[in-house]
Length: 64
Image (cartoon, rainbow, N blue to C red; front, side, top):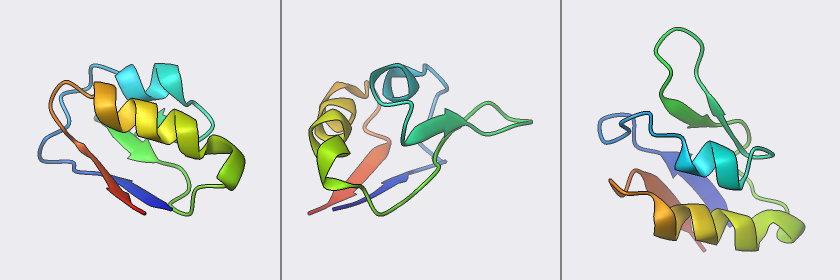
């Protein structure tokens, strides 16, 4: 699974960072979320799916 954050859509609400801090973090300077790693380890796939589903602006991209 690959993951990314659409910077044009991200509104810095931090849902993804709260759900899966192993993958998502806030970018220094603008506070938008970014994916620290894009290739999601198998043990974190479920948390990434949850972040994808709960992002209120649909800024997370998943490629399964």
